[in-house]
Length: 624
Ligand SMILES: Nc1ncnc2c1ncn2[C@@H]1O[C@H](COP(=O)(O)OP(=O)(O)OP(=O)(O)O)[C@@H](O)[C@H]1O
Ligand SMILES: [Mg+2]
Image (cartoon, rainbow, N blue to C red; front, side):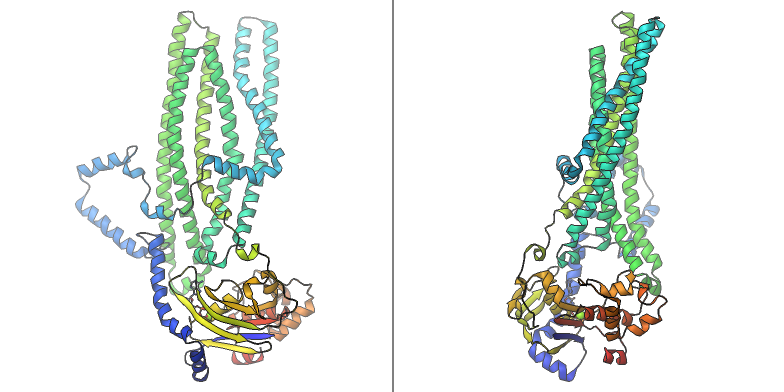
């Protein structure tokens, strides 16, 4: 077994001089890296947020600036021209409706068309297509039954008035049948669409999560946890409305609206055409409204993700926040995104109000036109009162169907907007390590060789971290790599674990190129204790056994814990090895010892300790 140990040191005279001679570049890079690190950070900030700040930082500067502007406004006061400008900007098409520029740059997802989004969703639910087919079949029966009801309702009233008893009874029986059928089918339809919805969200989350898990580590260098969990949580939920709610309502109302329109044209084509014109105007308004809602939904999604990021970061760094007393500042940071969210909601509400205004005006115009033209037609004897009553009932049906279609279409657009980033993430190809099948060696001796290896992190291509590194570790040899903080020790380990691939040069294991070896096989044979070990929220025993493929007995776990000098403190815990822990409940040194026990338990050919005892006292370190 080869043992590779990494140490950070300020001035280790004997070790550093040897280290410096051998790997001068590691040390040289240090100063350059510090400089480039700050440059790169600035670059990222300016790339993502053109003018403002990284997720709310520098908010105090922003606050000061805002306050100055407000104060200036107060001093000058709002003049007549400003009022005119304000009114102009609030009118449709004015500046007030435009969304701010500082977030436009965050739209990294390619726009998805409605058709494409629906096809993707179909791919996800098609395995259970029987639910969808049942849903559609019941939808059609329910829609046809419902649309027939006003006809038989009016006919029943007018046949009763004209004392046609037999026809009246026939109409009433039909009416009862239609009511029962539409009731049963509506229930079935709702249930099936609900099930389809559940299937869609489940598959979507499963697919997205498994795609994310298989990404290269460099992918996680550029994404934040808050953003990714937001895609998995709220975005998938929003997309799920598509089948259960939006499509269901759109199809039902489109079907009923078409039926009502045909009925109206047959009853009286001039009146039918008038209603059609009004509905077309309504549809045009809805289209504009729908597009606006789609854009607003995308922004809401971005801002929600950003707010999540802030909350997630603050909660995970709560101790630092408390020690530095920055609660207020964190609240400001969160409120900044909430402010942006409410800005969007305000515009959405005003747009919704305008939309309702247009709907009500157009809806009542249909009634007025119908009574006016219909009344004149009755007077001239062209149509009967029964026909006019049916006409008014069906035109109401048509306009309501148009409204429902529009309303749900705008909701559908919002869901499609939310789906863009989810689908883009789902389309990411898994890391090459998981798709290519490598070789497995019969026996691993543990001869590690770095040959002329250079490397920079993909997220920081301008900073070369390792420059022409060549060294080898022989089986049964214990090698300590010592270097200044930030000089690239952990990076060497990252390359050996194949978390990243070298930019230049090659790494060999027992003479075989590392990248040609099977990744699963390789990782089972390398034990690793990281610099800042993290524990899962499960009991200590499971934490030690984590990732063990073989059947492990409790005695083995305790043996490993004893080797890592963790057994004594574990035994003192309230539930011993069954104590539930997470990242906060143990001291740094205790976590390190559990991580060491985890590595020992698996009996690897190569053991890498990246400053694994940095948090231990001298005695424990010596023992471990
Ligand atoms: N994921 C990353 N993306 C970009 N740069 C990184 C990443 N991880 C490390 N770096 C940079 O690479 C350089 C080497 O880092 P590394 O962690 O290897 O140093 P180290 O020698 O292990 O330091 P320490 O002794 O402090 O643990 C540092 O400048 C660091 O900022
Ligand atoms: Mg390190």
